[in-house]
Length: 104
Image (cartoon, rainbow, N blue to C red):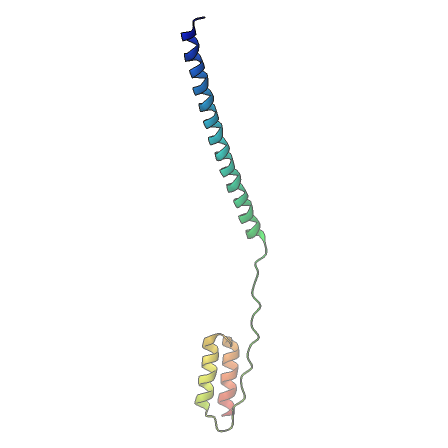
């Protein structure tokens, strides 16, 4: 076999081997990305299946007793500000308002 004929075959083997390695590397990267996406999906599914964590409601503030000399308008304003801040529920606000109105 002449020496000139071996080089093209050797060159083809090197090029083919390099192409094989590049293709294998790309396939490994793709598989890693798919595995990561699968793991992320599993974590999302696990989080969705977990029971929701609800915050404990803050204890409702008891309506303050009417101070001596305080006007009914002041008491209603205090109750309204507590209701607006979320410290009182609508039912608590209505009951406290009713007691201020009947007591005053």
